[in-house]
Image (spheres, rainbow, N blue to C red):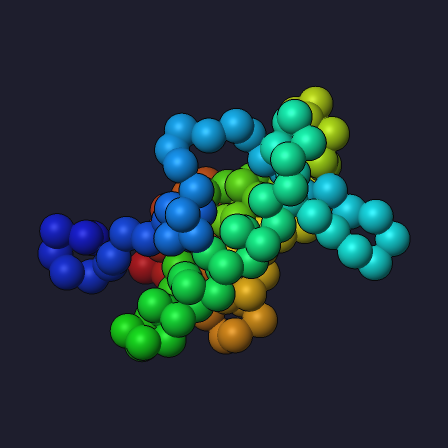
Length: 122
């Protein structure tokens, strides 16, 4: 898709200036608030928010109406994310970028469900 000019590759976390590789992060929810923290407890919330906003700008600036995102990620997970306890448990929820794109009218797929959705549409 990228080679054919039908898609662009974007990583919200890289756009936010986070290094790769880096320590795993998960969304931690408390009452009505959330944070994105690494396994060692470092707070990356602002970086993840910035990456989500930059990704939305790219989508809007390029008239993108669909996104294929990485499953379960605190940025890109859609429908399921890790529970914030670093124990491998998935819960219902969205990553920050996925949620922002969805709320702005962009159809969000995961790398796990995109091909299934493509087959259904044929």
